[in-house]
Amino acid sequence: MRTGVPGFHGDRLQQAREAMALSKTLLADLVDVSVQAISQYEKGADRPGTEVFDRLRKILKQDAQFFLRPTNPSLSSSVCFYRSLASTTKTARTKAETWKTWSRELISHLAEFVEFPASDFHSTVHLPSHPSLIGMDMIESLASDVREQWNLGDGPLANLLETAENRGAVIFRYNLDSESLDALSEWLKPENLPLIVLNADKNVAVRSRLDLAHELGHMFLHRSVTDGLLRHSDVFRLVEDQAFRFGAALLLPEHSFLEDLYSVSLDALLALKLKWKVSIAMMIERLKDLNIVNADQHKRLRINYSARRWNREEPYDREIELERPAFLSKATKLMLDSGVQTIDQFSANTGFSREWIERILNLSPNLISPRLRLRLVDSAGQT
View 1 (cartoon, one colour):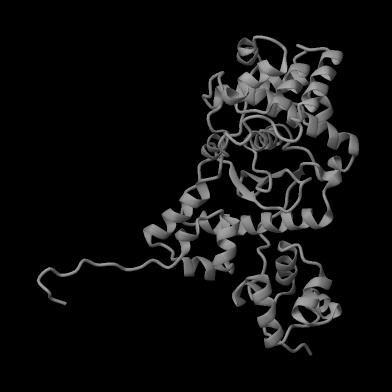
View 2 (tube, rainbow, N blue to C red):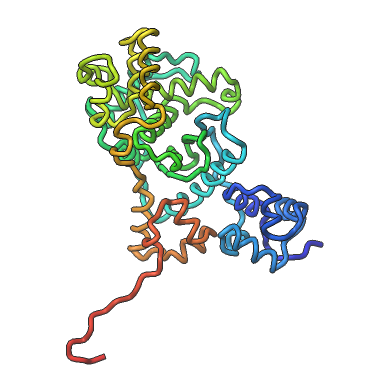
């Protein structure tokens, strides 16, 4: 017969550990129990006593209710697209998956009180279901069609992230503690909306915009791709190349971009960076994709680019403002301000601590902190 805290869910302990990128060994050391004990707790073969439970809660920054609440079985998993999958460590990927799972739980609760924008991720361009049948010309047409459907015109996009949120994408920025994991995305079911996670460790605006455009490409291009198909390395590379092509075409429409370019040189590209809010490196690749430069010219541009040490940091990288998600913060504020849920109710109903709600939803600490009740002093001296 098991002893310990009644109602303890071992899978929640595993989630909380993986969300903080802790190994079983490290967590066992921090809690002062054996690795075997942690394994038994996570498997559900045993439960921690009250003292160990208190230490687990403090280390993992969750309230007791989190570990006593079962996971949500209705949130089925679909294909998730990871950038730089080959070089991403298992720990980093597992952490990202856990944060994504928790995001869905919070989204599901928020959606009970706040109406989310309907997803507008449709196009008039017909695409084959298998990636190998999708040509780059189709992708160029798709990017052009998306701009038309979303009424974006042919010029630079002022704020791609805001545009995507307004069209129904749910976007997060997390510190994923991984240089190789740039972003990830998944079409959520049954919510029927796209979820995109950007790595907040990389705070260069132009890189983040391309990461977002890339993930939008997956959401338009690869909704019918299966996990089994992605396990083939050639298919994985192909869908990544296709998403990059879509992202570049969305950010730099061929006609208007080339109309702005007065010469094929690094200085000419630099002159366009602040206007188009894309990296010089991406513009070089775009010129290659559009056959404006041949292989030798492309190579020279890349060599000169590295010679200027722009591969470390480009000019203007720090001058272009980073685009930050706003919808979930606004949705949470609306829910709290309307009085339909307090932050304590939000925490109790989802199981997550205030600290984790703040981290997952990118909230300002002031939004969920206790609010002072103020009143005017009675000028007549009455109480």
